[in-house]
Amino acid sequence: MQVAIDGPASSGKSTISKFIAKETGFLYLDTGAMYRATTLAFLRNNISVDDASAIDELLENLVISFKNTEDGQLVFLNGEDVTREIRDLEVTRNVSEVSAIKSVRAKLVQMQREIAENHSIIMDGRDIGTVVLPNGTGKTVRVLVIAKGDKAKEAMDAGADFVGAEEMITKIQNENWFEYDVIVTTPDMMGVIGRIGKVLGPKGLMPNPKSGTITMDVKKAVQDIKAGKVEYRLDKTNITHLAIGKVSFGPEKLKENYTAIMDALVKAKPAAAKGQYIKGIALTTTMGPGIKVAN
Image (tube, rainbow, N blue to C red; front, top):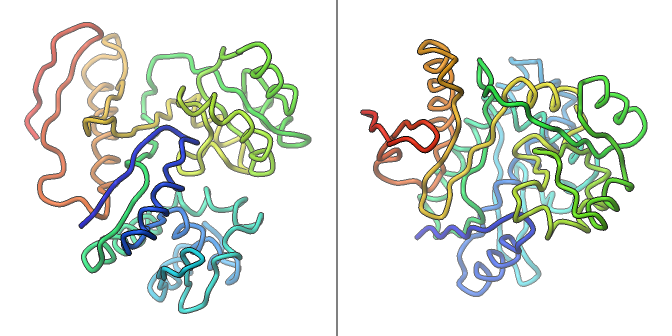
């Protein structure tokens, strides 16, 4: 049996999932911990994200497993308990970059499927991911970067609309300020941002390492968002809604964006998904009728 628990950021999905797993004896499938364990393996072996052959060799011998205990779940990397070590700051700083590697994602999805086939599992959240549309969305996206020092300067140089640190948190708290579409931050600022998680979460603004908005590579994150990076997730009825551009783009550019989105969705098939994955596709203009697409 596979159970998924959904909800906005900072709503307690992980806490509830872990509690249910403990009470039922199900395995809590912490996909975030899997990416952290893989990142730890990269750091231990001094592997660059650009070294394809070294990455392939590491992934070939990579084994990540979980064990439920009275005190919580343990995470093992090649048989070694790394539960605490994967939460180190150095891992947090690098996990987004490692998670973006296609071969890493493919390997971990394969692992997740194998685990799901052999255990009753609890998963928190529905699948979430990002894709950079080759022709953008046609919209101007306002980016707020919460960072300090060199990373703040990096954000300004990359074209962020708003840049700051604690003063931005105060502005959001005191002025109910939401004149931006995306928040990008560095790992060291998450302790501060966490104070307003209950405000940002329901609005879909909470930074997330899986979507690449918690990262040390602030420049790339801002540039990707400005270039047309979009985030996809399932709603409560298992439907994904995404803009693929404007009518003025013309057929070819819209088709390129559509293809990029479909490729990303297919590659992101969850480990526990059974049967037909995509059951229907429809295209529509704003306020227009839906046109069914054969899939």
